[in-house]
Image 1 (cartoon, chains in turn cyan, purple):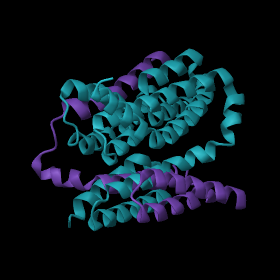
Image 2 (cartoon, helix red, strand yellow):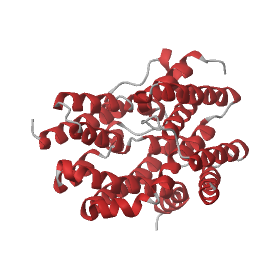
Image 3 (tube, chains in turn cyan, blue):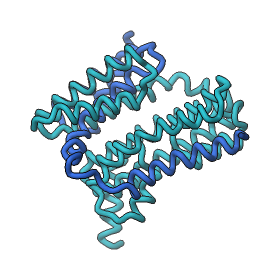
Image 4 (cartoon, chains in turn orange, cyan):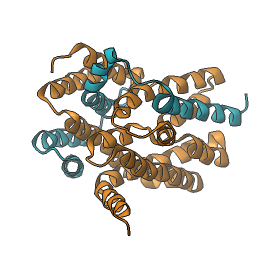
Length: 227
Length: 99
């Protein structure tokens, strides 16, 4: 085995303890998505949507709006709004990537909150971190969707008991990522301010969602500039 | 518009935005580089708040709040994602048994 292959294998082994709980949680939500979307989109299209989109937020939003009888333009508008979050995610991770445009285009398939955070916070090359954690998350999302479609409400019911555990993974993960990316006291202060302000915004205006929280983070990073 | 077309267009929007953001758009200008450099910690704190509060306004389960508090305490003490995950999920498990 070459030294490069050995490095990749060791890097993958180091990543697994952090990546597997995230992938498992994503898989649980994939099951819930599959069970919820199948009556709306049909089994084949539900699975295809996860294979070709890989975005829980966009897919859940689309199904919810179709169920509510929203017009196609409105549903696609919501998907477009959710897609705006990719701009700040890409901005923060791009400066760490040394690869060319073609590799970045391939990696963009895995541009989600969780892979971005792990790429920023792990000592391994960010390209490798995004590829490994993204592949695990994508596989879990598609497998979960298939299980949800084929198992239907029974599958969703069987994961109901562990859904709160899966839901707990995400705030815990993001708290850890915020702490790891806060290299200075001023970063920690900005994180506390952004977290508190986002809680306030979302309690008052829940519909602001992730985009509202990201907007708060951008405002805090812009305004609170002391190093 | 058929449901198939709708799903396809949604996929194109999502994938297109990812490719554009990471591979097509130019890097942020110097004026914004400082903001981007300061963004990661507040960004993940804001996403933590979003995943904690949720989108339906009902607020989190008490056990999830305990998980977040345990994760915060661990993250403040040990700079390790694995320890933070273990502390948060351990706190969640303990709180689920008690609450």
